[in-house]
Image 1 (cartoon, rainbow, N blue to C red):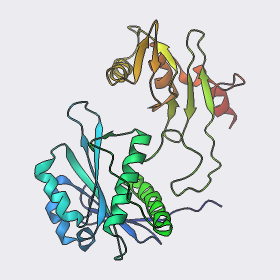
Image 2 (image 1 turned 135 degrees about the horizontal axis):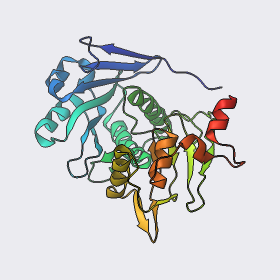
Image 3 (image 1 turned 90 degrees about the horizontal axis):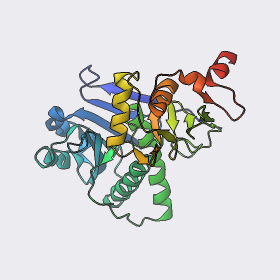
Length: 289
């Protein structure tokens, strides 16, 4: 049976952009999220004076993509303050510690390594860690506890607005490994010249790696969608192959029409152009619900 999660978020100064303390009810972990200009206030929070893991969020100056740096420390407040002079790309930080004294240096190094791996796998943010941190060896019991800790980090950091650990297409398990029985249906683009497939998810529609797209866009394509195409090409997510463009990785679009128009290079109604294995369109499916 799938269990829900109850999250408690405290706004320290009543502002959603200020310092936030967050926790999942029944879990010993906790999170502090705050903007860069408030980092010196971290030491006022006892929670930040313990071993933990932290995420620095910003924009990569080279690519213009959302970026993150993942680190660990025996005292997270001190380490984060060092990054004020050492790293200038970030403008927000989220750190995780434990309410008790059971989180050790070995634990947080394990967390750092696994979280870097999961962030790379989700591929939502530019990861600015230079190397893959080595994974410490833990007793089996400790390892299982840390994997559960990671699942709760994934839930809480997502609830705080950062989905860096969420796969674009679900693996049918939730953050803590419970079977969800949620299967995202696969749709094909109704276009003879291009073979493209996508999955409709909770966030939008994900065009799958290997899908084909038009090499050129028509002048009638909106400026916004044209910019999306250009950005995907510049970032290497759409690669030219003979007379077509090929998706090099899974890409999330906000709507079926955005996905279809970007692929075909022309305005179109995505609800009619995306069809299931039986040829039933998204529009027909939505009208029958």
